[in-house]
Length: 276
Image 1 (spheres, rainbow, N blue to C red):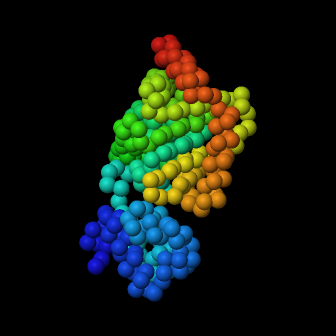
Image 2: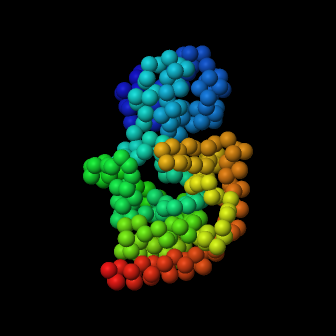
Image 3: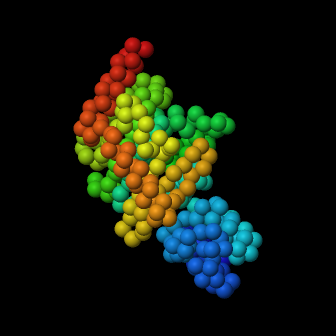
């Protein structure tokens, strides 16, 4: 049996990992220590419930002496493209029953309109080709499909006021984007809270974080920077992220007041667009 038989299947990938681990004489616990991964994460990969990161795959190849098998045949996402560091988080996002996200600067990807997302994706450096941007855009817009179900996942968004005030793409793009958020909030598909500038310092100033819950998997947190991202599984670390989120939420405006503020900023954007 070889992964090449079905390179896009997470289950096939997990079966191959289990086969090679057992052939090397390692238990999941022993492999976790040698590959610097949690035993739970290895169990989820073998069961086809999780996608290993590129770093995970490289360490597995090194420990199991598999010559690049696990790196070269990472499961694909099946549509569009995504930054490698976000691939595992994207897979988890699709499985989550509840998601709570804090965004300090930009509208979270799952809420972005096409025009807003296009502006964000073409603003990075080095510049992307139109083909690269459009491929990323497909995946970005597909993320919103998790909101098609009227009940699951239960989604909360904690937005810094800077997210509302940053004129991504100009007033017309921002007006559309903000009204999209208001619409989702008004029909109660999402719950949104704004951390106003007047709060000053708060518990999540260091950067974005997403918390995710599942039916049959432990809660995880996802944090990221400019060129990196990491899924956190250690219960004590996830609890720390949850506590920081809860503290920041305590400083935020209510759902009703947040929608009123977002609506007001959207009206300002519409006025600016008309003036132009």
